[in-house]
Image 1 (cartoon, helix red, strand yellow):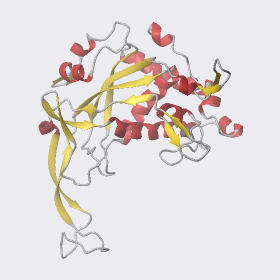
Image 2 (cartoon, protein in one colour; image 1 turned 120 degrees about the horizontal axis):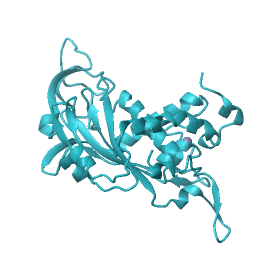
Image 3 (cartoon, rainbow, N blue to C red; image 1 turned 30 degrees about the vertical axis):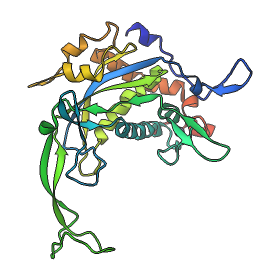
Image 4 (cartoon, rainbow, N blue to C red; image 1 turned 90 degrees about the vertical axis):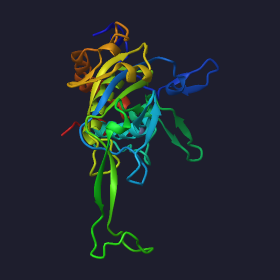
Length: 307
Ligand SMILES: [Zn+2]
């Protein structure tokens, strides 16, 4: 494994109080510096998806970027899915772990220090900025090539088959054209973890796997499941979104990333076996740091093992 990765701390307890020069105390989370790692890769849609929050089924969010109209997946949308997956992974190990986004954020656990949050209760106000920055991702394909129109029935078909409905009535049937993003659409991304630890990265890689299986679509029937290819992990970011969209080439067999990888620093983590090795460290890192991960939980709960 590369040297810079070996030098990362195993875990950082961001709730730890640090004494400043004037003897005041502050939690570690507020003393962030500019250390980071960037995770660079792409998602490939496995099935049809809709990422938009728009109620109108005809509308998919697209935006012109680098000469093409493209579909985009916002960083906020992905962050919401990742945060829930990260919670679910932690809950597999401690069933009593109750922190839940968006309404029950405990502001004491690993997830809250990683994804941030706000408590607005009087005398207890606290705000944590997210250490994990997920950026908006633009489709490699043009929107024209990435989208498909499908006719769908909405709700159920009533015998009078009226589109209009009176106020207070149940919804009646309607037929509409639903705009969907096609499978195999590629969404390259650059994600950043500030003040990273080995545990952060291992859990983040697990979180991606789980989120991909659960999908990013806005409707239960349209899951938007994906697979993610991690191309590089680096602590010296030398590329931008522009490079992702310029240098990743669609081929018959998928995506050719060789031009992009040439722009990576020599010590970037790019080999699949290195990435698997980090994932394989997850359980040991979790076991060694569990008291800090679930701060705020009763001690007996922390010792409960996975069934
Ligand atoms: Zn929490």
